[in-house]
Amino acid sequence: MRIFTYSQEMSPASSWARPSGPTSPARKGVDATPGGGADVISLGRRVRHLRKAAGLTLDELGAAVGAAASQLSLIENGKREPKLGLLQQLASALGVGVDSLLGAEPPSRRAALEIELERYQRSPLYESLNLPKIRISSRTPLDVLESQLGLLRELERKLNEQVATPEEARRANGELRRMMRERGNYFPEYEAEAQKVLKAVGYPGGPLSQHLIADIAAHLGFTLYHVGDLPHSTRSVTDLKNRRIYLTQNQRSDHDPRSVLLQALGHYVLGHETPGSYGDFLAQRVATNYFAAALLLPEHTTVEFLQQAKARKEISVEDLRDAFAVSYETAAHRFTNLATQHLGITTHFQKTHQSGIIYKAYENDGVNFPMDHTGAIEGQPSCKAWTSRAVFDVPDKFSSYSQYTDTVNGTFWCTARTERSASGEFSLSVGVPYQHVKWFRGRETTARATSRCPDPACCRRPPVELSDHWAGNAWPSARAHSHLLAAMPPGAFPGVDETEVYSFLEAHSGA
Image 1: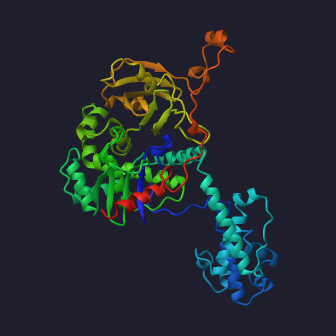
Image 2: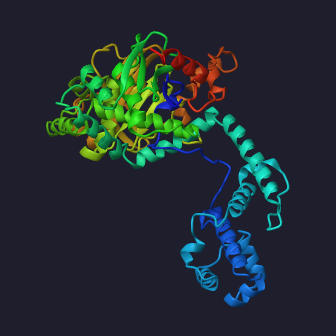
């Protein structure tokens, strides 16, 4: 039974990722192209196959192309990449085109096995085992190749099950963030899919109603079921066998029920397959989050709204929120999707816990977010001088708080507000470089701060007078976060109990 599950929030990293369509399991230990050049292993096996098919020895082929037999042997064993001239001579001597030598498909099943085993033996995975390498030749029995590959595949699979540590999650998140920055957080492929769906159901403009969302589900061929026993680790479960989407009757206030349903539909519309790695899992989450936002705040009408606000120099996240009846966080995210592409405004976004820890972040404007060695921002402490921290001390919780902050990377203007959730109080802030502030409401603020981060003297190191008085005389009992030391939950959908999900579907399949 094929299903889609949409899990509860697990970690700060889980909301940002790269775009994803159908995915396939990643081979983390295999380098198909040593040195980043041509696939010399496949090329070598193809040359050997064609040479033997032509009945030539290494010496005979070498004489035909003006190369030593030892040089050709290195090429056939994937240890040397031939220059273009020699490659053309080899193709001519073997009676094929150069494209045939560089073709993607191995010439035979045996060659495919030899290529895969050789790649494994050159990978970091095999190096870490400290095992002797098998010399692969035409005399290596076929069953030996199959047995060795079977062992290595199974070992890689087991190691990949264990690799989803918090550090691996941060690495994947950092990689995806770099891609998002390069694209300005704008994904036209998701915008196009959302537009197709809206057009099909006759979207009239304005906020997307529950009734219209139900029409979207029906248009895509799904029936909605609200149940009281949804698996606790999920927000929704999609049964693709019976074309049903199960939602809980008791939605938590943290999650807009419209978004939960649209995200579930997004997996189907965007053609997602079971994620093959934690990076794929993150990719699918950002894709469905983006797709849902593109339905709740459609590109054409949202851009028109923002362009009119820019013309009046009155851009406001609150106005965007109110115009489309979404949460402030959704409106802020959507602004980052469209600001650079359609308004020419670079920007940044933060969701920061009251403890000062950054839970979500995005930037393409050069702001100096703190990050670890993997490039991850989530889990890092925000500077105490930034708007995202200062807003917690503002008595007026009804209005947004705006502030200019002078940083080592220039001056930035930010607007922020706080919201409470089951996990505590968070600030949500959107900011831009000084040159773009003229387009925003709140630019008249007189609040200003200076941040010298990442200099530890800015806010990481205690003031000298306090340190002199208390250093060595304080022993705080830290509030330990056990999830920081734990591996990510196992499985294709981290944190989801598949047995519980399958049992739930089995119980409801006859309903």
